[in-house]
Image (cartoon, rainbow, N blue to C red; front, side):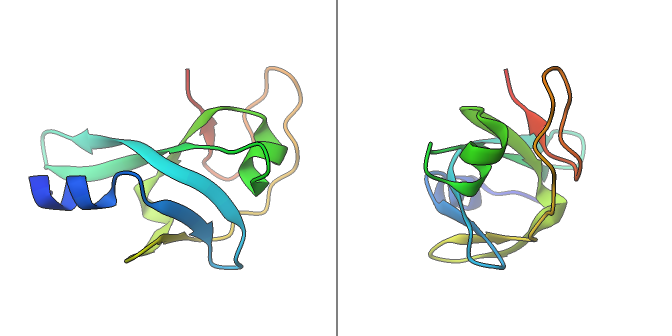
Length: 98
């Protein structure tokens, strides 16, 4: 179950992969309201971040299942992906957010 405290503590945290790549900052969360569990994190990418270079998107939705740790920063699994072609979603459960 997700508490208000947990939600507010994770917002605005920096996100890194477990290999040290900077992805961006958490700007929003998706919560499954039937089970009150975190479903996804919404990361605002930075132009100089790994995710910003790969996807070129401002915000991306990342499934919470790839989050490994939450502390001073958030650590996710390192997802190997190729640069998506126009109109294509990248491999590895990462989706562009509108």
